[in-house]
Image (cartoon, rainbow, N blue to C red):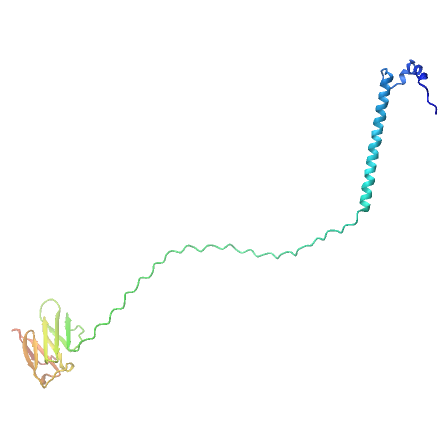
Length: 222
């Protein structure tokens, strides 16, 4: 195709008939038209370049996916389910215990009574019916208030028997429980009144007080 020379275009451009074919509703100068045409060309070229870049990117992505080796699927291991643990009830705190009073300590056992001296005797009674033990026994009391008492001590060395009484009217002695030496003189003293015992009074002898305050040997009361 042969290009037209610039000399033939002035009549075409400047003719009033051809002015309507130029873009826009206003008249454009030659330089404005050239600038407009150049802008259109540049915009078109930019669109073509953008489409080409998108197509090139799609091609590169497809190639990379095709060339990438297959990766094995990740192995997912599952743990066995743990057995359900039994729910233990909450441990309750023990109730506060009240202080327990310590048991009262028991009194120590009473000391055993001292061994009875076979040569000594003591009796205290309110009536002759009270329990009496030993070789001295009260059989009758003098009139009046109070308890009656009697004590007796025998001395084997002296072969002597001493008796003290209070409110006692009559009493008896069991001489068989005393180690009396009948081969010797046996002295008996009752309330500071002395006398002598004989073997005929053995084994049990009864004494009774007189109104004068003396003590005499009497027969047992039936």
